[in-house]
Image 1 (cartoon, one colour):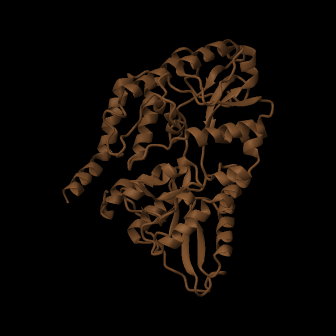
Image 2 (cartoon, helix red, strand yellow):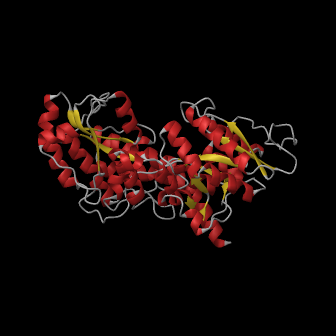
Image 3 (cartoon, helix red, strand yellow):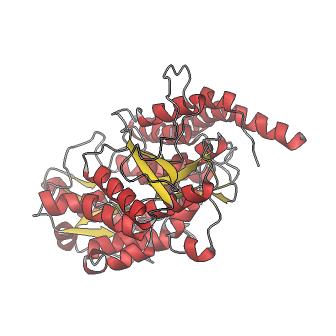
Length: 448
């Protein structure tokens, strides 16, 4: 639908980039152990450090791919870790777009798939059958689809839980609802009110919640907006005015302000507030379960359904999204690249990543093979939430700006007391400045 000139790509992704990429030249047959005559060479980049559990899982998956496709394909993995600011890996990709040195397959963070597709870094995968696509969670297919084309398949999936301290809730006489009948905003305020005296006696707060910079804030709290009928961009991914600053989103921001005003959360982050037993609830990633099991065994942990607006229509609304594999725009072997993408995101690879890193798989088969998701109530709750209510993050070429503005609105409005309506409108202006070139190019393409 939208064609992008590579000369405009780097304006968006890496202004002033000075890195020089080395071309991704095809090696000579026999120059790499296992790469034999008659095999099609496939290069693959991942964002991890090799000597980590995640890196070793990817390496083993590539090795098993080469074993299965011996004589037909040979995959050669390169590890390009991200640095603390998220660069490194993305810098290498940006430089390689300019130099023509992209690999056949690369990892892409789920929320950035639309931007990579829009800007000509990745291309649609070779056609998958309905049976092949049905192997993946709905959220994985939704995340990897842009402009009605499938560009990527998630290696793993992720989830966020509303964790609770069973002992505190029992003392307060609070019962947790089932997954299909979550607490509404109004009901949750009443629950927080009930547990407040107990938490204050412990020197804590009912809810351990913050709005940190980076991707965490939109990841954790977008469900509050979605369940209230709100969103951040329209379906085209190119319009935010009237969506980001909608009345529904204003209601959501004001709900968070009410939580703070009632003293149900701290204005500043308190380390290990929930884990130390001084908070009844905490919103955090699925990694919290393993963290509690291994480091805070005294905490009687439970997972409650994510809270919904009083206006919730029963639709999908809970957090999802993680790293995926995609085929680069420059690969000359889209069929082979697609086979490698399917392998790296398939059930066997997903089980391996779970075993080594406790990252959630992306396929139903992997979940069926991992007994933890049927035997452990907390992991089962997170999986069922993903399966039944998982919602992909906003699909737009300016996702980083959308994410940044959601965090800014919540921090400035809730924690600093700024007017929520003004902050939402200000966010629209900021995002529109980034969207401008995409909108102009869209109009030009419509004329052709």
